[in-house]
Image (cartoon, rainbow, N blue to C red; front, top):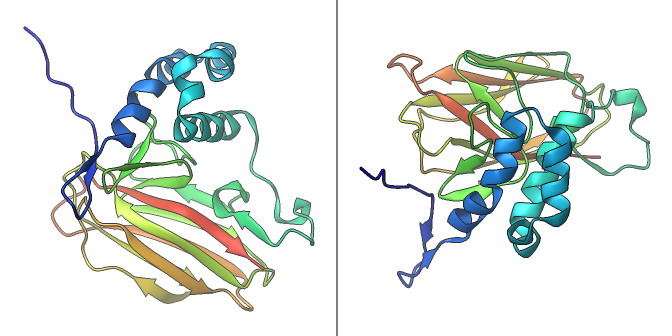
Length: 220
């Protein structure tokens, strides 16, 4: 018997379905399979030559992000040039990172699809966390702002709360959240030495508590 396929999508105000995420998911399937086999060479070849990947800019960006995450270590704070005005938080070496399930990953999630899917869309950059989780960075007062969005990953029925802590003080937090919502954040980091992102169980157990911090960006 056949098994129905399910793909994320969004519907705009006019009622038109945006299937860009579904197209991206399909285009990336062979690439994700290569990554699952730990065949980085094949994944690079698909990115360079696969017509469907070439035809979809978002698919190319997602594949590039995943390959970079797997092959390029995050940078130490001291290695970032002082002239750099913005920098993805996930590309900054963390002081520590722990999650309630699976490894702490950047720009992909630890399941066969690899995709950061939230709010019916695929996102090329972000951090994965499963409650309870904690990510810590030493930012040493060198950044003025952190921006991004937070969400429960699509396809996961868990309930999660999220908080951002600067030098031991909680400066931003969400209520208990479920999939389908993207919650933007904008944090003043002036003078902040230590930054923590915390993911909490929503109160009904930790099953399926997949949380994504999407496009977290540091700005000087």
